[in-house]
Image (cartoon, rainbow, N blue to C red; front, side, top):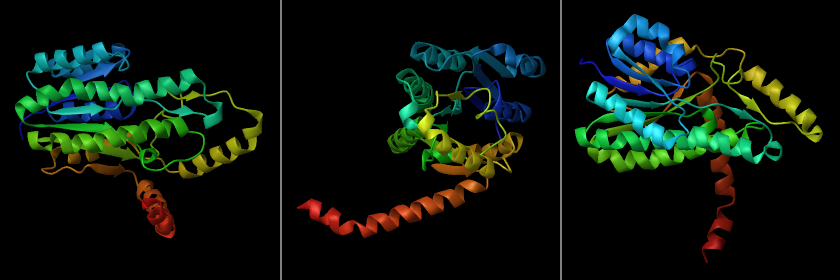
Length: 274
């Protein structure tokens, strides 16, 4: 198999770093972005010219387009574009400030959108390519205390499903990766938290207890690298794929409940038709 060229955002830690390492170790080339490229010094020292570190804040649209162009100019092509940069914003919906809500959407939605738009002309021209959008089980279901995070991932899911249909004729694939709980710092140092309201104190406690129970056996980010390679090497990659054992269980319960509710209320739907 010939070497592929990756463009990965958010490679300083977590999925982005592990996937960059996996790509490099099998002989691929990687344009790796991070807010602080010093976090990539060890990889640069080990892999030399196969790695192109790029300083990037994905909320800067002009910088996103410039970074993608730099990567394409440097390596001569792009094969796999991974929108991984993002973070979790905790807080009940009523607790969120405008700045917190906008910042979550700017990073998780617009950051991925700008990188996608920047890469598409190159992928269309070469009639091949694969865009990986790092979504979440939270992109198809929702729980208390992360409502704006869910909003960002549902938005990512929506435009990516439409995108997959728009670019299929050009030989470009789109895959939404939907992880469950993994041992990254998603809920740790990289997360942000709204100021809690006293009336939600008990609800916050219940939410944290539920999350802790569901995180008792978190996924291994290093193991996820083998999974992502399976996805990018597939002749017909999926539009959606779960990472981890728990997401299928959660999705099945949610969608069974949705279908039952829709069917129960179908007479009202018909009434509305007129």
